[in-house]
Image 1 (cartoon, rainbow, N blue to C red):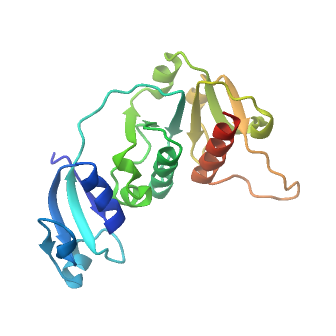
Image 2 (image 1 turned 60 degrees about the horizontal axis):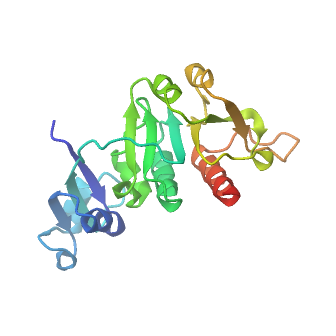
Image 3 (image 1 turned 45 degrees about the horizontal axis):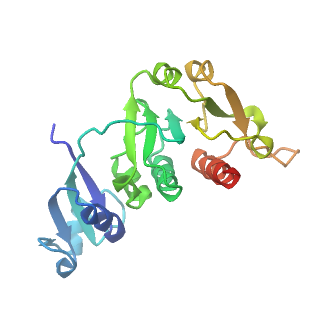
Length: 219
């Protein structure tokens, strides 16, 4: 296994470079902007990009060594999030709100998926994603209350957030798994204010943003 990942785009690549991540290959249409860049034209970039529209720069970085997992006062957990764009956006949200850890179930999409890296806009360089094999068992062994985002939960707007807590989000289509629901202390929801035939659910990245905003406002 090569233990490499690809990052594309000026903003994304520059974030990893600025934080000292090891770069094995750097291809740029404007190589004067980067040291040790291989000059390529748009035709070559179209052949190596992961996207329909080629970016001006593409880099191959070494995957980081596994880091120690230490729960923060606020810890986000993802249970079966499959969409790479959603994961990338949630990583960016964690970065924005000052969280340096994100815990994921093993069936959550790889954080180094090219679309996830792109959607994180470089925040993946500052937020460590930890994939846990038996996530319910791991969380139940921690000494923090566990809260789950669920449509049948208590309203987010009348909930008193504790100083420390673990907040679990499931996929939009399937919600939280049964094993995860079994260990959750309290379920919380973002109430739907449209009473007649409103949307069935919120996008998980959108829901995470609302949760984090309300949680940090309360703090």
